[in-house]
Amino acid sequence: MTGSIDSIETLGLVDGPGIRTVVFLNGCKLRCKYCHNPETWTLKKPNYTSDELVKKLIKNKPYFKRNNGGVTFSGGEPLLQIDFLIETVKKLKKENIHVTLDTAGCGIGKYKEILNLVDLIIFDIKYASEQGYKNLTGHTIEESENFIKALNKSNKPVWIRQVIIPNINDNIEYLKKLKKYLKKNK
Image (cartoon, rainbow, N blue to C red):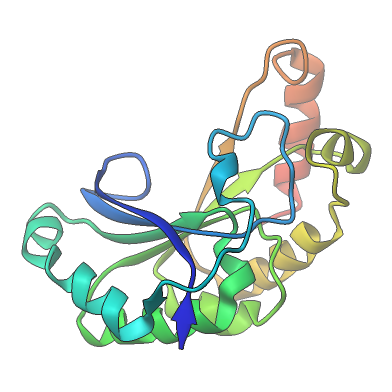
């Protein structure tokens, strides 16, 4: 099984608990106006096998395990390479490595399977309404809502992220919408 990896960061401090190794996968359906890594939008030619990636990540295990960390899969949208992700996470779990999934929930399915494997989900809320979501991402909110349904059934711990953008969602009116939106999720 092969996957398309953009980069690997070995000192992630905001992508889950402890010190993390963060794997940025290529491919994303969304075109967020404020994206900080648009170089990951395109799904490029596969450049790692699952075994190669796990071997590389295990080299950092003594370092991040000592600091209550682990591995975080980010992107792009890691759920677009779901089979590669599932295979890789299974191998990491055999090594007793904490795995976090950083996602906007815009993948291609198999959500229940990946949610059963990971330890933590960092869920990136793009916007708390259908129209606002479409305006910011160029995509409908539907797939993200499908992921939220699976996430609610999983009972996994979740960290919510929301990028605050001046003149778009940095106001009390939006924060009230966000609060209401969050209440429908476990």
